[in-house]
Image: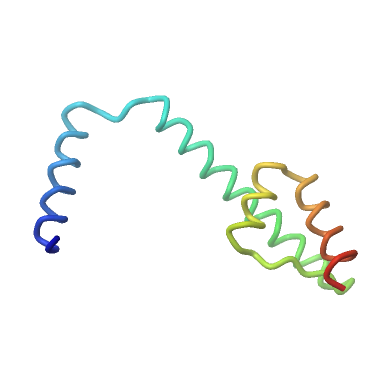
Length: 88
């Protein structure tokens, strides 16, 4: 596939979405998931800021963001427990 075909298909899909509209259920699900992932990044950032004083650090990657975003504070606590008991 050439890049011209890919760009043309994307433009056609965007035009179709403008006229038809995006379906509300998948759009709502994607929006809520992105918000949860953003909250997960914030949880991990603040944990790394405050946990750095105690020698704790959880890397911020897709797996840890997914765990902390969808499980919340309990996800961060479980990641910290894994960091303490399994890694060190």
